[in-house]
Length: 319
Ligand code: DGY
Image 1 (tube, rainbow, N blue to C red):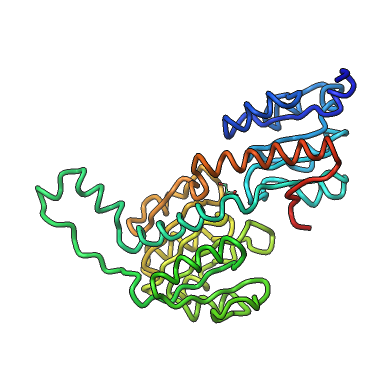
Image 2 (cartoon, helix red, strand yellow):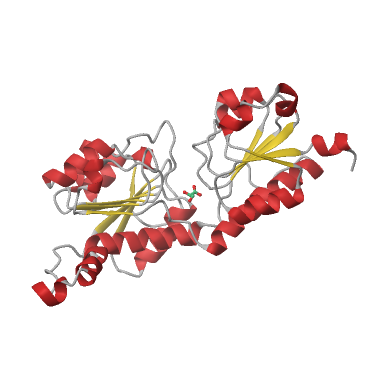
């Protein structure tokens, strides 16, 4: 391959993220490794040589897109792509891809695990044991919350939401949902608004992506509708929850508990949530398994390769 051909396929790879993916990209493509601020600091000729950006969760804003005049494709690692200004990319004719489907089962498993851990206080009970309190203080106190007879509302009944619903069926709980539109392939009660869903349920599982429309959709009003036995689980995006309102709802007992895998300003977790004994907190691990991370990385690689070879991609982000 000539130097001209190679440079027409040069791929910037963000430094952060999944090691196997980064290494495989470096083996397959002519790569420049750097975070967005490092790319911005490159000289004009270097920036002009970049045709693709494989972002492993690093932000790609309008300024970066404009600073890379020959950028053709942004291949993002993850199903959520709120860290990419996809609207600006579309305006500039830059294709954006993501990595859906391959993580549905792991995210759904984590949602169920987080729900059970939040209700049954399993992480706290384990800490009790490890601190020696079982022998010094006796049995762990009886937990007030259980999954029995709960009405579970799923916010976002796409592929991941459906995987959560299928798992929940095994627990015999009532399942309701709110989605942009009603599905004709399920019999679960549909709610045209999130407020109606929260009113009908005592448990809310959010799997929606972070967008301008979903930002802070779960606010003080929605939490109050869940009631004092209410439980919120979020494995979608942190920006969907008004974390100030949630911290206050947990403190005041407006709802009973929350299980959160995602936060608005990761890796920063609001102090009110860290201080809440009735919150079960995870460091954004819903999709994190060796299998899934490799499958996500493979999709990043396949999208880039297909784009450079045929001008098509496998998994573009929705329009
Ligand atoms: C995703 O794919 O968007 C996940 O949140 C990443 O772990």
